Length: 252
Image 1 (spheres, rainbow, N blue to C red):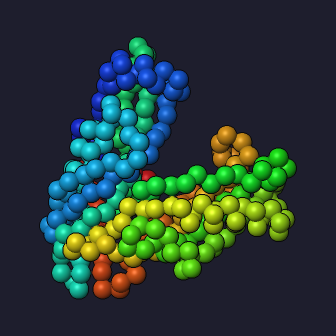
Image 2 (cartoon, rainbow, N blue to C red; image 1 turned 90 degrees about the vertical axis):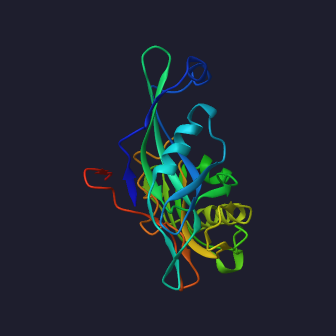
Image 3 (spheres, helix red, strand yellow; image 1 turned 45 degrees about the horizontal axis):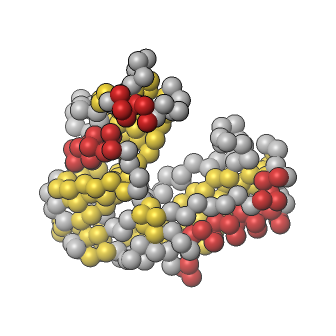
């Protein structure tokens, strides 16, 4: 679910912060992950940012995360406290005087969040030959946040060369192996329900584009609709954001 929050989302960065981003384009979109504590009523009681977050926007992101209201997690049908993750979409736009406006445009609730993600190297031979790929992996995440490789697999590999679909088996295998090697070193922000870390399953897309951007590439590398983690314990339901209040705006 993606929610657009309308209040308290605009911040003019200081000239110092702007100077640190003087190489940024006129408009840029960034995604950040927050790890939030949610009580049994669905209220966020704490939020911390994951990964590298610029100091100038950290407070804005944390304040936004704290304003999200949840349907609480449930265990055996009973509402209980939990910890879960949010993905916040932020746009940075030049103000025309060297400063930047930063605005949180959306909050995606329950998306899997990486605590540590090893970058996936582009297979060298495939890159030089003009290949690209969209790889979808189904991961089993242990309660310690690491990937259970024995219970995980590559669901599909969509291959293309010079902008056209391809069925080269050797190149397909090279992309698959690259993702598997990286997966073994990924760790995730663990879902917790009633104080207990959970084992979950999640589908994660990985895109390989021979250009700097995937725009126009004929492979669907977007996240699947069911990309949020699912608990392996059928007796547990994870917390999820409530629908926007009347008068709120739902993002497409």
